[in-house]
Image (cartoon, rainbow, N blue to C red; front, side, top):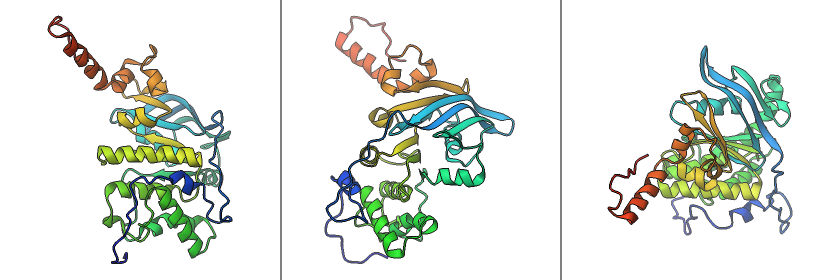
Amino acid sequence: MPSSTPVTSSPSPLPAGIAEKARSAPDGEQGQPVQPVQPDQQEVRISVNQLQVGYGSYVLMHDVTFDVHAGDIFFITGGSGCGKSTLLRVLMGLKAPQSGNVLYGKTDFWGSNEDERHQLVRETGVLFQSGALWSSMTLAENVGLPLQQYTDLNDEAIREQAKLKLALAGLAGFEDYYPSEISGGMCKRAGLARALALDPKILFLDEPSAGLDPVSSRLLDDLILELRASLGTTFVIVSHELASIYAIASNLIFLDAQTRQVGACGNPHQLLHDPGTAPSAMLFLTRGERSHAETDQTETSGDSEPDKGTAL
């Protein structure tokens, strides 16, 4: 249990200087900063080709093709039941596809043996929707668990690494708190810190904003941007939150539940003006925004055009 002594200076939800902390080598010499990672954005981290996913004979999605480049904040979007989470499980190595390929770099993930897949998965981290923290462990113990399992670090080094990752997530000073003693947004950031424990190249996030209020959701978006800028991490995020999509997404795919195919792929701002964007994807991307724009136009024009509709 944490000390009963009150915390004299609680860290802010997203403290300034996260990038500076990330550039500080924990096991290096003092005063030797590590420069931010600048990923080669032409490098393809994940390539999905003609993927078909489903359960048994049921097909959720087919002909799914897209690339995730280094440094991308890549969103998988779509309506409920379209297969977003199932696709994420295939990319994470938790479920085999019915057909098609998932390449990590140039390596065919599902065409590799179990040992090779295990090595590829070691280069990724996962933030589950609920945070999935062990309630009987402190935040530092939760973050240190992957290091205990997959490294030869001693207990002291593991705790130092856990403190660093928690600081990166804006939780410096909360190492000895239990999940039940912090807020939902803080649990999400602690889960993100644990996902960063092994310094992955790719982070998979499943509905990271689920259950968060708008302010906490925005702070989490800012944290993702900070981590991408300071660590060069590539993000693959399942979400239907338009605010987050427009704020941080560099690319996305929209899964159309009706056609069971990809309805749109690209930068969300560019897709809004692309005549090739599927109507279902356009409806999703303009949810609420088009009606607001038309309402504003109607209000400024007064009653001169009484028959002009404002709904989608």
